[in-house]
Structure formats: C-alpha cells, structure tokens
Length: 431
Image (cartoon, rainbow, N blue to C red; front, side):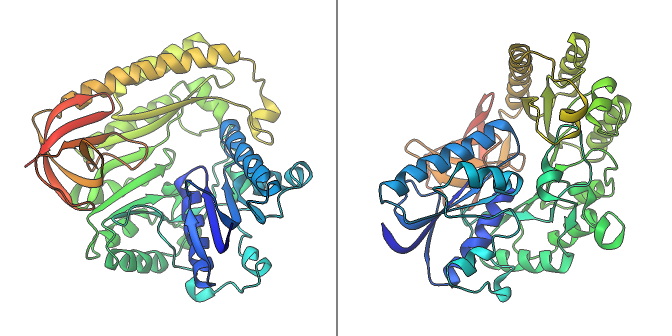
C-alpha cells in the first residue's frame, strides 16, 4: 500500500472519463500521487467511477467494487470510495449492500471527496484536468444531461436535465489543451444536438465547432452523440468547409420501424430518418456515419426486425454498434410496456444484425485499398504502428496497422498507403 497515492478506476463512457480527469487534477493539486486504471492497484485510497447505464455496465461496476472490497479486507487498500452514475442512481441500495465502501458520491457531488480527504476543492482549477488519454487526443464534454426522455433510457434519471457548458469556457479549455500538444478533440455529450438551447434558446453547436476550428493546433474535431430529432443542420456546412472538422458523425438512430420508434418515444419517423441520412450524405460528401441500433424493444415483431435489417442493408453505415434491449427500472418503458421478447430471440436478432454489419463494413473498408490516407499514430506495438483515420474514433472504431518500414513518431500524422482491408482494420505502409 502506497501512502499518499490514489488510484482512480474509470468505468463506462468517455464522459465518465472526463469527470475522472477533473478529479485527478484536484487530487494532484492537493499533493497526492494519482494513477488511472493502473494494472496494479497499490494505493492507500481507491476511487471507482462507476457506470449505471445498462445492466451489463452496472454489473461490471459491482464486480469491480466487490473485487476491491476484498483487497481492502486483506489490508491492501485503506479507503474505498465510489462515485459516478451507478452511485448517483442507486446510492441508498449500494450503501446497504456494500458496507466495505467508505464513501459514496454521485455524478455531481464528488467535490465533497476533497473535503473528506481533508482538502478544499479549488475553484481556480475547475476547468483543468489530467489527461488519461495519449497526449495527442482528448475528449471534450460540452454538456451534461438530456431532455429527450426516450422510453428505454435511464440517462435523464442519472444526469438530470440538459445543461450546456458555456462556450467561452470550452474555447478556453481547447486553447489550453492545444497549446499543450493536443491535436484531436472528440466532442462528446449525451445530446450534442441540443447544445446551447439552455444558454441562449438556440442551437449553438455549429458556432462552437466553427470557432474551435479557428484555434491554432486543432487538427481534428470529431462529433459524438448527436440526436436525430431537431438535428442542427447548420453544422453540415461547417463540416463540409472546415478541413479540421472530420467528416464523421456519431448519431444513434436506434430503429427504423415507425411502430418501434413510437414505442421508444423517439419523436421521429422512418421517413424523417431517411431524409436526415440523405441530407447528411448530400451535404458532407464522404461522411462516415456511426450509429447505434437496438433490437428486442417491446413491439418489435419479426416484421419490424426485418424492416431494421433491410434498413441496415440500404443505409450501409460505415460504423455501427448494436445492443439488445434490457429493461431499466424507472424508465417509461419499464413502467408502461411489457418486456415480452425472450432473451434468446433478442440475442439471435443481435447476432444477425452484427453479422450483416460485418459484411457491410468489410465492403466499405475494401474500397479504401489503394488509397493514401492521413493517419494519426496512436502507439507502437511489436509488429506495427497503430493509427486511425479521420473516420475512426478512439476505442470504438477500426484502426490502421502500419508496417514498420520506416520509423514514425507517436502522436504525429503520417500519409499511409492502404494495402489490405479487414472488416474492422486496415493495413498499410507509410509513405
């Protein structure tokens, strides 16, 4: 056990990761040695930043806490703190079920951790953080919460109403990070589309991204988690005209059947979805669209599932993830709809959908063979350098395996000639 050291373990999404980075900066300023997701937990105090979105993520959080609880009982840890989404949502239950945890904090009250450790939260550092990503890229969280209240989603129950970070604060953060060597900014939120509505009653995402693109050192800006209903179409000319705004959009569509979309309370129709996709591809040539689809939601019969499969074949998403519906306590669907589709049916549909997407992905990847693409180099492994194109977000999208014919610098860009394609990887040689 290393005294005056704190290990932070972040679970779940990149938005959680940003919270951990802000906490780490405060702890560092208080004089602690801080480690993140260390392979060997040896600190006097361990903080678990939990995810509470879906059942699998909740279980991962619980399993991690139990494992660390055992380490505490063995004398390897003195203090065990839990924060984040799971703690925000189920704190009372967790306090009763996990007595080995010393303190529970939610998603927004973790500042009290500093006080419990005997230190004051420093407001002058509220906009600073310790990056846990490689130094050439980061995540930029521009808002918290969501006002959409989809039938299946527990996020509003955890994060509350949509709250945008003021634009001057974000631009200042981008400037400081760019001056520190960050080249790639992955803009994240539960709902990018609504950015600014709570500040000035208008969609301010296009203005924010346009102003970010003017900042020296910003090489790539990538957009994650737009909402399809009331989409801010003014962002498209920005994407099309600014070289450092990636032709990439992460926009979760969930389904295409009007029946299922209505049950999901998505406030969008099949035709409106098709019109949105057509406009995205028309106004931003070459755009790569990442989406998330759901199978097994109440009301999805065989006909609705086949409609989803046909839609996937026609839409040909460059990037797609999917998951099976799981009922979340407190959501509209849990209280008003019967989760009557057997789990084995959900899993079979999920496998069919992902197998279809693998074929689509391979076909799209093969079209890049013979092209020379700009790639940012993330890391070096035994046989290859590993990088990404503008169409690849860290952790979730394909990577480019670059042969070691010539030395490359981590965090720098290279021109890579693509020689081979796999469903979720490209291979190439640096020119």
